Image (tube, rainbow over all chains, first blue to last red; front, side, top):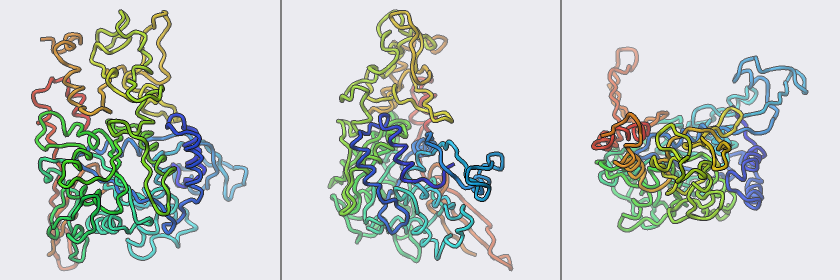
Length: 466
Length: 63
């Protein structure tokens, strides 16, 4: 994979997929301006991001981290390619053999584009470790110094994510406290949350111990609060619940906004499904239920998991429109459910346009060509498809990507013939499952319990036809 | 002999705490006992109860 993401490549990615990302040409110009100075060292401003995990399955970060897109060719060092891919890829290039210049069509990880070397640093592999001629720059001083110096090229600084960070125990908690209390390069941070918040009892989800080493507590009553927050008195070494951590972080004076990543942190999702014992709810609902309310702005990016582009759009928008000094966060326009309007609308661009508008099967809706059983061609509405109630761009965006970066499929897909007798064609592939409405509040209950209700269950052959 | 707790534990999908005990065997401290604790509960079984069996393929992959 690509270890040295340049500003040009990031812009290339955003420009290549501008339409898909919902970015306008004006947005792109602003983005280019905002990124005019590459974040080459930690001393230059690079927005801090803290990624807190509640009752989650880690599907959201995995979805984001696995997003790959095709970018243009670039020159890479042969020794690095040898180390990464073996010798089969190396061949004499236009620059000769030492170093060998290789032009490759690089499939780039979308998360790498945004996070740059931060993920590499947190996983213990920094760019300087891979470039053998620059070993002197590896891990100077203490581990915390390494944290500070190991983010050379990212456009954000990912300061906390337990799934990918290299350190465990009190060391990263100490770093988290620093960032929370204004220790980041900009003195401020964006909080990303995946997973629901167990409002019934916080002990259902514990995120770290109240210990930053040296007998010091991470959360102290004297911590500054804003947006309606006062820090609680939690004893040294006690487990901190995700509820306390969320309040502590979202209530920090430096917390500019919360990005609720996924259905769980947006609206409760699967952990908040009917019959749950933990009282799981979304972040916005939780912050509003407190007395006093924590009023930090919340952006919902729902989906189970959300499409990586939706996250990339949100981050790219923030990067493009946020002013750096003084640092103030710009939030994309939200719809009535707290989602960025630009990507949670169909091709019409109008709010509340159900995705049937873009669905390749729309011709067959309520016609004899509509599906009556699973496996049939045509519109799946009679099988409980939630398209008629779901506002999103799934039919035009596609979900997975192949090695060449092309979108492969989405949940519904196309099959059958249109009213004129021609084949229904979707530019993305065909999974042929009724939409579950995972980007709408109420998932999974409204999807699962009504997909298979009395009326529709009889339409599915060989299953539960009582 | 020493005991220590690592929370959070990293590089895994989910939440984990780890308790370890070390004992001096005469040469160095060696780890003699480790307990790990899964510190997150959602109760997917509770959520699955009273549902149509065909909800399983929708809900259980999201764990």
